[in-house]
Image (cartoon, rainbow, N blue to C red; front, side):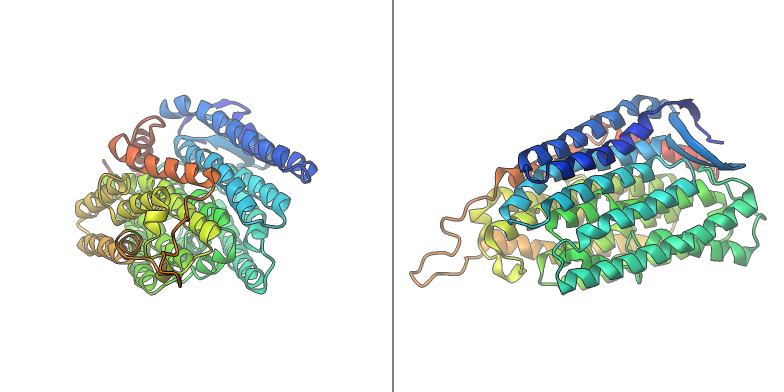
Length: 508
């Protein structure tokens, strides 16, 4: 049973299904791009509004629930919009609106083929993501988790080049294999507890499984959610998937896929194992070592990348482990910092990928060494890139400062001093691989043509369909630093969920 007061509502189901229902219309209007894209935008707005209606009850500790059908005793295929699920669904559905607008500018500006398949797959991906957010139990979670893999595969292989096909196969191999491990873990949990329901503070208790068995069970789940969240050495599919169009990269890195993995880590730690079991069996140390090593190694590899999207990809690998690190601390501020980084990283990283896409579509440049002086030609785009860079380093006035502050405080609270060093060193490494791009863009002269004029002369901003979304996400990143609780109450929800988790485990 849920720890929250539940009530029957079809809204979680409607929020999940609305974009899937739009798919036939998107396909039907394949030869009419304006109508096809209008359907995409309408579905995105409806989805966000439906999720938003669940916020007041989530803040009050009530969860809308709909049991689709019962599979066996104690196992339902059901949706429940608990506070943590609403938190994640708000981020995903809200950013889908902006990503849809951006996609229109990108796909038209780059004259991409298979645009109808692209928009249809995008819509299915968001249905799966909301299904993950609102899963009431492990079974429902795993079903939607695997559906997300299948829905995003056509997006990864969109160009149908040899590199894209190879990247898609690697993605499927990693993600589906991880899913099988989670199925095994789910069966083990059910045999030990008789339930699969997500419960704040966990459903496993000391003694239900032997010490060695508990460690092995945790590793099954860690690999299961670790593939999508990019924990090393399970990460290699992620940089290779950068052959996909940039809006897909934004989807993978900021909205759906990898955030579903990070969301899954918090679900597993806080709602399956629980803080008490994690601490008793030293499972948090396993997670802390894996996430800390990933943060540093990914940052070092990012330094060596000259392709802009690949540098951003390795940055994502590192920053996703901030969320895992926060969960591993088993402290109040650590959990808050990890959950807040789900939201702060989303706005910052989607801004950076939007910027990379605008640069590529408009100038056909993807190598960092070719970006000298571009900031003067595309000031809005590179200005937004600067904001995202500052935030990922952890500097105010960008929202990344908020989550990193809590993560450092949580590490000190847990007296895990090596992780404090990891976080501080990560900030320096982030500055080392982001700030040179900003410096090149604004403080170096661009190459000269044969006539002595700059290669950027006459080059302006990309399509407003692209520049407006990246400007908005950049502005949101600054706004949420000063007002992290307005208007969606992200900080309040993160605090509430943390209290629920810790109240069921370690004392606050």
